[in-house]
Length: 101
Image (cartoon, rainbow, N blue to C red; front, side, top):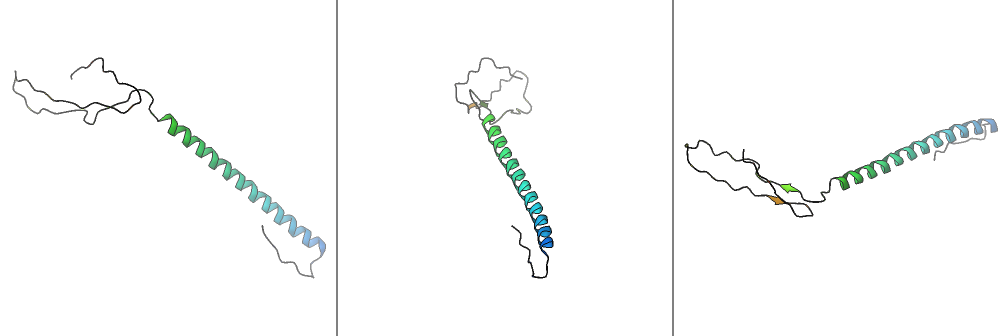
């Protein structure tokens, strides 16, 4: 709230004119505050909704190592590598088919 000093020399008309200006300013400030508060609430709701959407439901396969380079391999030599597969989801993970590249 804004306060303006009023002296005895001011007329009643001048006091009301100043008060009208301060009321208009105060009303505009309240409108801005309500708008900012509304935007803040809207942003919080949007972020909360996005965080729920990113929570995995069902199986979620995670490969700590997605590729492996054997380097140069002699023809006819058998090479092996084991990949760890993790399930970070909430339901069992079924691997039905694997295609080595």
